[in-house]
Structure formats: structure tokens, C-alpha cells
Image (tube, chains in turn orange, green):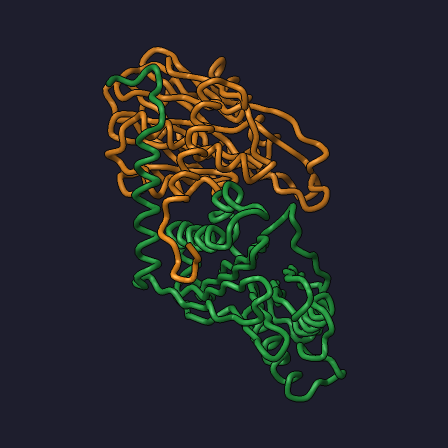
Length: 243
Length: 243
């Protein structure tokens, strides 16, 4: 499995993805699920979950198209982020559609994608792209998207994130959400690829890769655990408890 | 969907279940998923998730068997909790097995069960019973079982629960786990049926039903939310943050 997360708040965006892939617990590896692209007037981050082969094919085609666009379209030629989402959706559908003769057994070739970024003088946007190629946009009402193993890490987001959340809090929430997921689910694992994209700063300078032993990650993970336990110990007693 | 939870610690056991059932978001109802039985030397709690029709048939057969045991077996005649788990497994399998002619479309008739309790002068035990009729027992290494929509509420259990946890903390963790799940998932909803079964006290006196507006539930839910947000606000800043 996979866990990827993108948050959009007023001051910027946060992208995070784990890097564990597996075909059963006896066959797991580490692959990045984040693709970043930064040139000229635009910076783009793409996250993916689902069939790794499909996802990698899509990333490969994006790179090929940047060298020589097949249909005259690539991440550079798109005039806005909607056009990029549509382009990515087309690649996702093409690569997950396998002819009946090719299918061996009950394999799911689908991949989901999150695409977010900003083109100079335009707004920051995030899209969730379905395997069928259609997509939806992040809004003030839904300021984050998750793909993959989404449930363990959702409660903290629902408590903390809205569009007025500071960029720092959004970034901390992303790390806590990943940390909670990794504690409960072996199919999500480090390193975590992590990007903070400040509004109107057309660069991806705040980019990091956290392992289990990265100092900031260890620090935030331990402090959060201690504070959570302390908070829990302060909850009111039941009448039936002896004291 | 459903969320049921049973925890076994040194001083006793906690059982909790939501009561929302649905066949789509436009057709949801409230049904208890907890069956309690308390007579003579034994108290038993059963929780269920999955196909409501199968679960209700099983509960009905348990009650019928108590009046006139079909094969000479009921919750009273069983000499230990393993025998009860085996009896319940048999009922679960019988009721979920539908002949090919009866199946209309792709309906899943399976139900899962959690059975826990204590017979006087025996140990407290909890079993998870699969639709196939087999079962596993709660142990010191795995002091809780969940069925249904398990993921949202698992992180807090993984942080708090071990076999040395006090019964009060186990009960609070169960409520927090249900609360987190209900905030993130519309298919899990109140009222919450709730039983605390103290070790060697062969009664289910501590039994409650929490709605969204029950004072203790509101209290613990609000305090937990406030403390969580306060803890979150205390997490260390990133280097790139302005102060």
C-alpha cells in the first residue's frame, strides 16, 4: 500500500508520501511516489498510489513528453493547472487500460494521482486524478486530499486542517498523519518524501526526505506521542472507577 | 458499516459498539450490534459487524437455543468460553451460507463476531469469530479486537492499550477510538453501546448507552479535542517557519 497526502492552506501547500511498495509482506521494496518538476514559471508536485507499474509508466511518459511532446502537450506547454490535470488523467487512463488478452488473473492496473502546483501569476491548486482520467479540485471546504491507506491518518487532519491553518501547522499535521499511519500499518513505511510549497514562491526549496531516524521526524514523533499520552491521562474519570 | 471494539486488560474487559447500519447513505438506520447475556455463573457480551440480516438471525438462534437447545447446546450448557466461540462460529457459518439459487446479485452475507465474557472460577476471555466459523483469542500481545470500520480508531489504541492498562484507561480509549471514527466516517454513528466487565465480578452492571449529547460522552469528546489541539500547537517549529 501507500499513503500520500496533499494539503492546501491560504499560505501554501504541503505534499507528503511514504515510499513502501509491496506485493505481499514477503516482497516489499522502497520506491518514491513523488514526482517533482520545477522549471521557469512553474513548479509541480505529483503523488501516486495504486499499481506501481502504471504509476512508473506515467512518470516515464511525463518525462518523455518533456523531451518531445507526443501530441504537442507536456507539463511546459500547459497554460494552467487544469490542463495539466487533464493531461495526467489521460496518461493515467492510457496506462491502466490493458487489453483483455494481456490480463493474467485478477490484477488491478489502476493508479490514482494527486497533482498540485503553481504557475507564476496564477493560483496554487491541487487536483485528485482518478484512474478513469477525471479529476476533482481541492477547495476551501475540502482543503486536503489523501490517496492509498487513508484512514489511519485522517482523524488528525479532520481535527486540525482548515484553509486558515498556518503552513507550519499543515506541515506538522502531515507528519503526524504519516506517523500515525506507519505505527498502525506495516504497508506504509519510510522514507517520507516531503515538500512545502509557499504561496507565490515559485520554487520547491523546502523539500526533505525523512527516515525513521531523521532528527526532526524522531523529535516530532516522540513529542507527539508523549503529549498524546499526557492528554489521555488527564481525561475525566468514570464514576465506577476507584480512587 | 459498523465499528465494534473489545479490549481485555488485567483488571477486566471493555466492549463498545456503534449502532449505525446502512444500505447506502440514503438508507441508514439504527440497530444495536451488542448482545448481552447474564445468568447464574456467566456473563457474555457479543458484538457483530457485517451483514445485519445474518447477525440478527444468529442472535435470534442464540435466543431460541436458550429456550430449547436444538443440538443440546446453548450459552448455558457450554462449559467454557472456547465452547461458546465454537458454538457461535457454527451459527455464523450456517447463517451466512446461502445456496446458489438464493443469491441475487453480488451480496455478501458474511458477519464477524466478537464474543467475550467470564464464567465463574474461570478466566475472562475474548474471541474474534470469522464468518467461516473459526476463531482466535485475545492475548497479552494482542489485547484488543476490532471489527467493521477499524482503521480510524486504531492509532489511539496502538498508543495506549497494553495488558497493564487500567480498566478506566481502557474504557476511555474505547470512547476516544469511537469518537475519532465517528468524526471521520458517516457510516459509524451513535448511540454507542458500552459495557465494562470487571474481572471476577460476574455481572454487567457497568453498562451504558452514549448518544452524541450524553454528558460524559460530550465531556470526554470535547476535552480530548481541546487537549489534542493544545498538544499539536506545542509541537516544535520547522526551521523555515517565520515566528
